[in-house]
Amino acid sequence: MFGRAKKVRFKVPSRFRSMEGKTNKQGIRWTGEHLLWGKLKLNALIRPNNPVMMHGINSEIKYVRILWKEINGKRRWYAQLINKGEPYQKAANFVNPGVVGLDLNISNVAYVADSNAGLLPFAEKVPTFEREISSLQRKMQRSQRQSNPDNYEPDFLGRKGRKAILKKGKPKKGCSSWNKSKRYHALARQKRELERRKAEYCKSQNRRLVNDILRNGNQIKTEKVSVKGWQKNWGKAIGAKSPGSFQSELKRKAEKAGGSFYQFSTTKTALSQTHLTGERIKKSLSERVHYDKSGVVMHRDLMSAFLSRHVYDDVLSLQNAQSEYPGMETALLRAWQQYQQSANRVSASESRCSHSPVELIRSVLEKSSQIASSGTSEKLDISF
Image 1 (cartoon, rainbow, N blue to C red):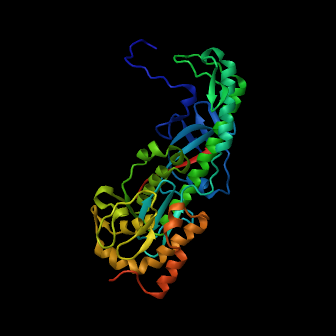
Image 2: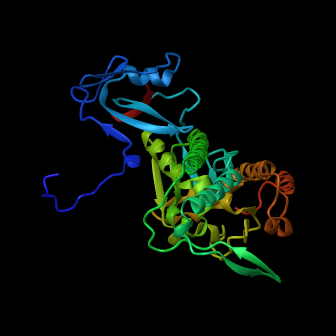
Image 3: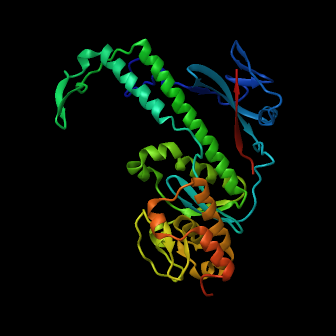
């Protein structure tokens, strides 16, 4: 404005989504059930039967943030209260002390606790809306071509086998002006709504999975994996399942509950390659069954999660793992069987070369073992 700025960074209106105050005594503030900002007074939509909302309103408020979200094509405004104290904890979301070993994958997570184990999928039963989104993208592309014919190269004849077909021209480079029709904006709103619903469903299911794991223990041990590196090869799967947000949410809640979140090196431990005898044998990613040199047959992820319980300072304690495995074998096999029943199918690599978990459980019954021997902040969203 005054011409003295060295570098100006502009924020487009669509990215300007929130504004907050410094304290609850001046500027944007919350009093009772109202939001005050100068002469502006807004009444909030408060649900008295919501215990989470009432717990936040009755707590001491540090400052207030105003933000907007687009839901079903309409902009809805919220007051986000940042409070002092502990957040509301539901009776079902209790946390037990104990050590839990994790093995994080692209689409599922394996956990092994003191007396329980599981192989659970991320974002279970979450609709991906792939067909709907693809259909909307094609309609948006056709609308763009009709509104901006000069921004595309001319159509040309191509070949598909022996047939000659008409192919669409590619967008020209350097085109800065694009006209977007009302139909294009309407289709874009529908696409954003589907993507928002998919993200909300995924977040809700993954948070439920975090609570399920914390019921078995609050001391988490897992390999230090790079979810960003996975995005290069499995970008669409990472976007649909969101294992990175699950990992960060689990770490936050575990430390909040007085536990810990310990990550160890994958190169030093190599749990997927390690056998109970101490040998290391590499295997491909398609091999989902671990055939141990000691005679154990177990799912690869469950075995890695079991071994991660016995990692201390990037070193695997094989002696502790060997002594604990006979008592945990039944729980691991039960978790493997439940996973295959929920998935309702077996991958091709496992069906050709693996044993059935039911047969393995029967073998366990016949023989006892397969081997020889504080003050924090919380946030509350209120709409108005």
